[in-house]
Image 1 (cartoon, rainbow, N blue to C red):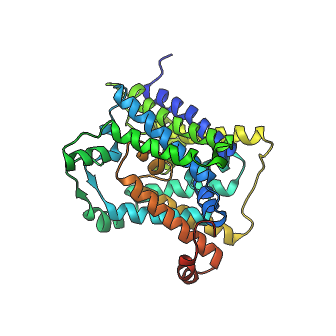
Image 2 (cartoon, rainbow, N blue to C red):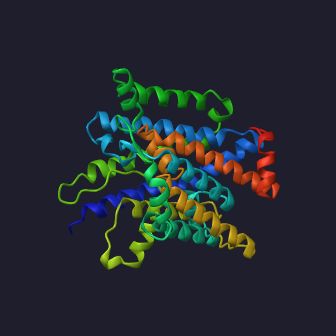
Image 3 (cartoon, one colour):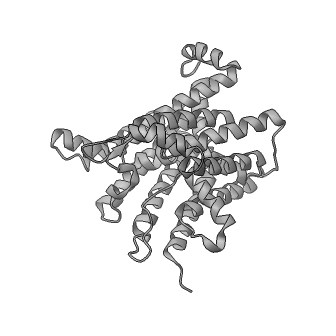
Length: 362
């Protein structure tokens, strides 16, 4: 039986997605959860777990590049054109939407695996709205208002490449190791984190899955007769791709993102069943459902504008040291903070007025 390159890459994406689903369900690996813990209780363990995933992903990804297994410069995150207004606007929208629904796209998939039907609604809305922003109704605003604001850089968006262009010195091998080391030191200098095996294992495991994604598409997918796009895990546009694939199976091609999406659901289902936590849930009332739909729309649209989600920009783009990653991450954090304040205060005005009095650990 001949297995196509696309199917083979999707199968690897599915296996890594299982790992991500288990990390979310068993390791409590969650972006919004990490932000909430930091803001409301001063607990940084889950934020450190995310930073550890970054460190592992950076180290492994650049090791693949150094070994000739992948060519990082082929990643779309490192294009020489950047659109900062789109990245910031998209990140803010995604962060607010994430706060309104209580999780990100990756987290919503993990919740679907645990039987959460309202998260199924979120996943559907994210997928549809991402496609709308890509080439549908809302794409008109993106093309008319945001695309003209893009500008070209003197080099690729890779931070080492930009540093080399500015200084004339090569940072291709030093910069990734330095960034990864600083992240790891910040993580393990905290004794509470060092003594908490669950977030340590979850963070390291998620970072390895990002590396697996690059290996799958950059090495296994490097087929001259069926070339696959160099990508790793992200959960905005692939949700829409998965919906289209399920609806047009006989006329569609499977890819890494589709396998990854289904893998997260499967992994979370395995974890929830193993822990005895699988249960069917739905929205309590129409008001909650309305918030889920609106938040999902913001995440799908914003994630498309920002070229990724908390996993796509927060881990995959970080792993190649893309300039877009810190911009989008800061915007998502700000949007999530504003959204959480809105939920606490009750109105947008009160949220904005009282935002400044909040601090980490307040």
